[in-house]
Image 1 (cartoon, rainbow over the protein chains, first blue to last red):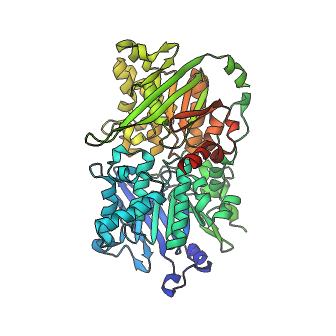
Image 2 (image 1 turned 180 degrees about the vertical axis):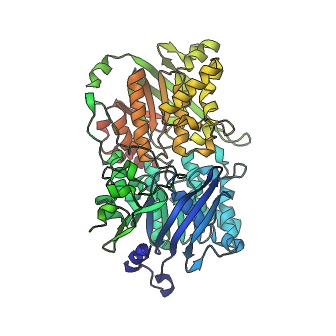
Image 3 (image 1 turned 30 degrees about the vertical axis):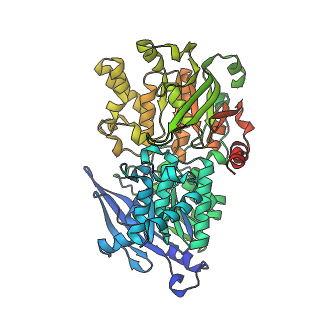
Length: 347
Length: 264
């Protein structure tokens, strides 16, 4: 869909150089399928979006909606059971799907880096400091003293204060939050142009999460780094994201500026999801004054069953007759937003 | 209001003056002690939820490890169900400790990757010596209870999503009918909708079995709604004792202001 690119073209770009004026990252109709015993299912279904330089894009969705598969496919890191069956991924005008493995290796961790969801990404038998330095020295020439100095500064700014102890520690000697910050350090040490952050603050306490998010904002200011932040928690994204992409069952269901999406969600899924956040208040107490938390009724659709209609219709409060007959398109809403729902088709 | 009958309830767990220090530094280095827990006092009444909040490294998980007996406290006592844990040994202690269950933050690390979902859930019953046919039935029922279809009983943990793995861990913890469940960041990393569902499930199970929860968390927005009382732990000390969740209306300022002052 050309909607996403039209949005980004209208945005003023912070960069002055002409080369940077185009999108940093443009994903067009990306489709990823997984092969399982019982057949194939589509995890990412024709996802299109684009990102500018120094832009923070938040990708919101529940587990299994294809947000991690989207992220991994950008750097060709998907497991062997997954195939990218269609689409184009342009990073600074280069099609990443056509790059040779060797060229992609130079890109990974250098210009584009990724923060993985779980800190099991660290090598258990290597001191964490060396693991971060390894990334730096793979992409740039520097002495170990320079590397160590650079690391010292980075560790301090992401809240790892006891430098000598942490540098020499093995992953198992650190807490979950510290390991997560090591993974973040690995991703940021080479000052990449684009950072894909898959649940970067999931295991961190509020203070540390706020510190990390503040550091991301600072990196955006000083290095014009773009961040694609993937999260299931709208509160995290509300703090930093400029633009939001909401995914459900492998498709983009809503897109728009973060302010708009949070203040006025269009898609019923986004609306229900935001209501689930305890920070946004609780539903009225049920019978007998019992506490109740809001949730979305039903389960996420089984990816192996392709429904003829909208994938959210079974859980949707505003379900109509048309919802089960065909799939809605991603509709452009005044050029600034897009939503995949029949409610907005007539307008 | 539930608060009225809770004040009359008796404590299922009392912690008095608990201290635990970790030794740091390798054998050739100068070793020093880090006071992970410093004179902790806690009271948790039957059927209620006490939330323990604090930033990472404050000692929340060390306290949980001491309560389930994975760590031996240096000083102080833990009274569970009217009996001092430190005085019990062997079979007696094991029986009592079965009534305290711990659900871990990292569900991937807490489940054996080589066992199927049903095997994982029924393992506590194997250890408790239950008959094998009943075991599988109870395991499947527990899985249904936490929202996992019994058709998934042969799946391995890596075939489940993070939320599903955590449900599996909850099913396993609930199988031995505990009196106290320690929830160590169980909702971290789960979808909001699933967080809501699991919170509702935990609340239902609490009223059904009169369970007590010690809920370790850093999600203040959730804890404010979920817990009956909140205790704030900072650098191994409980500051201010138990208070109502409403007392922490400005979470970041109140709970973490100490850090700005001390860290400086």
